[in-house]
Length: 97
Image (cartoon, rainbow, N blue to C red; front, side, top):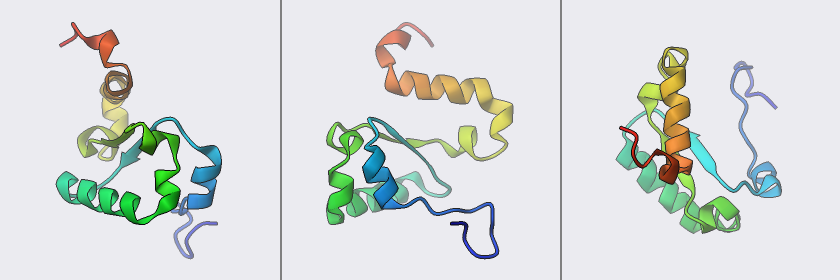
């Protein structure tokens, strides 16, 4: 259900995430990446639902850089897709600069 007065913002339920049990999670964020990473680690440790996820158990939760994914991402679409591909399949891009 969208947030009241903000139809473009819909919170994602933890129950839906646990049900889907993703192998990989990409997270977009705005702000200080170190602060976000610390908060994410604290959330994962304090919430058993996070710990139950395959992506968390296999250390495959990635923060996406703001410059490629939030601020006019359409302009950087090829770079953004390549960034995700390199993150998930680094061996394929070993010789790529």
